[in-house]
Structure formats: C-alpha cells, structure tokens
Image (cartoon, rainbow, N blue to C red; front, side):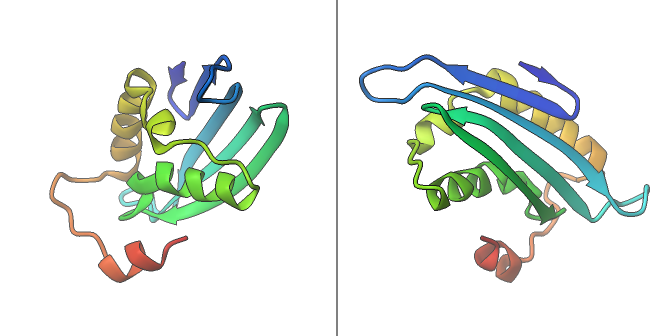
Length: 120
C-alpha cells in the first residue's frame, strides 16, 4: 500500500520466504528548490523479528534505497531475496515517482559514482 511519504508491504510465509510486514516512511530535507537528502524509516517485522532502522541518503543515490534496506536487514541477520524487495512494483513505482518529485530529480541527472559505491 502506498501513500505519499509511506509504503507498506506484507507477505504471508511460504516455503521459500518468511512472513513479513514492513513499513517505510520517507521525507526529504534541504533547500526547498533542491533538497539534498532523502530520509527513511524502515520498521515492522520479518518472521516475528522487529525491525526499526533509520537512514539518510544523498539525493543522487536516494533511488537506491531498496539496496540500503537489504543491507539493513542483512546486518540484522535477516536475508530476504532481492526478488522479494523488488516484487512490489505497484507500491514502489509510485514511491519512486513521489521521491523524484520531492527531490526535484531530473531524468539523466548525474550520480556521484564514488558516493554510490561507498554508500552502505
């Protein structure tokens, strides 16, 4: 389920995947004309393990937030297949569009590759 500033994904357990209920809140910070940071709050449960992680990403790498989520979960010993995180296009596509709008992102805008590679 998506609404601006929030997305929620749920999955019942199956043979290959644990049950999870994750929520992601986000907002941008910085000058209104060109905000510099996207701030995220990931919370919920995976297989009854509580999750509560906050992180910020520079505007040019903020669209890689799913990778950061996967890293947060791995640090806690929770391994979800990347396919699971990317499977919810109906929820994530509007989030990407809303984030692009809030960050005033332009198609083809350059990304600082060094920041992208070191961002963990």
